[in-house]
Length: 120
Length: 120
Image (tube, rainbow over the protein chains, first blue to last red):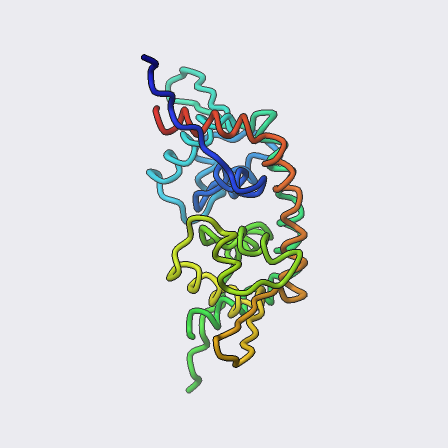
């Protein structure tokens, strides 16, 4: 008799694997804002405009559990907690860069398409 | 008196803009499978493993409305409908490539993290 092994996830392709880590409405933006520097929680929340406290904490926990984000609690009062990208998280954030450039370049076309979509 | 203009979406940054077009569980994979060739509907559905008919149609409609995917109906019986990337869609798919490579390279780390997440 052997214990049942936990099921290992399978991926359709490399992109599918990346998306499993990134998927979550706010995750790419969280990584984006941690790319250049580590940030305290409140600062990060101000950067990621529109995210709720509950949602931000949940996404940060998953990113931490996936080895993308590191959380450092300085055990101070008032509390001081800082988030940063791990070395693995940094490589993922780097892989985003072309998407940032694409969005920058096509911003007005995207805005027009989204306006049309809302009305259509 | 002036008519109220429809609200134009604003973006936090280039990445945010890209994500508005890409967001949707299956959209990046749809673009990925249309990158090398145009595909008939049934073929595309077989590629994007796990997607339902309703979901695939909805995501394709949004991608079409956003100018990323083109739909060609050959008006034949039995029906023959082909999907392909537009020139804009091609540039977006190209911006994905580093993410494909990242996922390929880190597949086992990602699988381990996801297994832990499910159990944790």
